[in-house]
Image 1: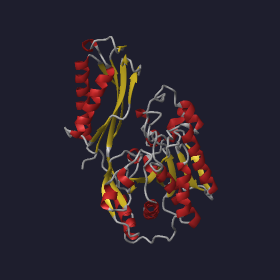
Image 2: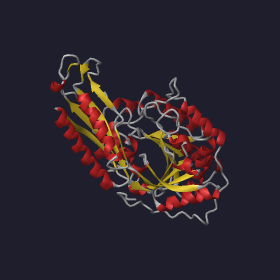
Image 3: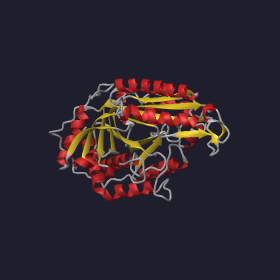
Image 4: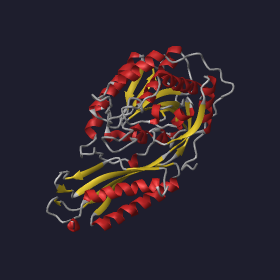
Length: 432
């Protein structure tokens, strides 16, 4: 498996000799919080819509901060809207003490499930609370984090918070807007952030000792194998293209077929072409058109324009580059054949990254001590961890997804597996 970056490995956990304290997570507390957060943004059909910086997202953020304060922890919000939770300090923290960052995100896609992102944040909060209640001190300061707008569902800048933390500000738009053109500035301010002070959210490389993220697998591998814990060795790279197709509107009944420049018909062929690059040509691991809009979107009018998103994923950066070029060429060819024009108006890219071997070893050892079968596997979904990898070693823990589904209301993981994942996270944090 190829990766675009060598994993940082500046930590050497004493995986065979460390004396692990007996502190354990509070099962009822963790599962209760998961259920409480699952009610925020839930619709009548059971799905959850909590897009980044939406009203529901702000409600979830407020609840997280209340839970942290109730646990005698100290939450704060940085300029990018990330929520950081620390233990209360009796005195000034040592200047040279590095941070062990643990977390994920609270935002969701539209009509999502209850666990993607939120589980990792709440498990991080639980780990921090257990460490505080037990009086356990670590060489590195443990900090729980809820990254802002990981999904990019409303504001199409995915990994917003983790990109800011990692210093990738040049890759973010100066004045970001949502899909309808509404600016981010106001919602970010309501979340406690500040677009004009975004540089203050950047963390220096030497400040973070490691980053750990616990997540549901979102796929079927662990469940099919009967394995309880996944040790992630690499996170897929992702290229997202926003494609505008321009044709000509016309009357659906009076415009002859050979005189049409139908943007919707062209877009339909483009959807099939995107599927073929992964399914038939095997140029990348997966390729998806997940969003398609037409204008004027009238039943008796030929579409004059259409917009679609193309999501390409692979763990090999060379293959990602090659498939993007192939997709652009294929879509331009279709445009020429249909008398339409095509424009690639935006591109979001996240490179594939490998996790740190030392953290993989610590996760595996922690699972073994708990009697949990584990296996190594890549992540087919993107995560904040791949942004944090720019400045710190990263480690990821997976737990099984029932039916292998995610980003849908049916997304679920058994309570036993949720608790096992949190226990592995705690033990891994203790041995880093």
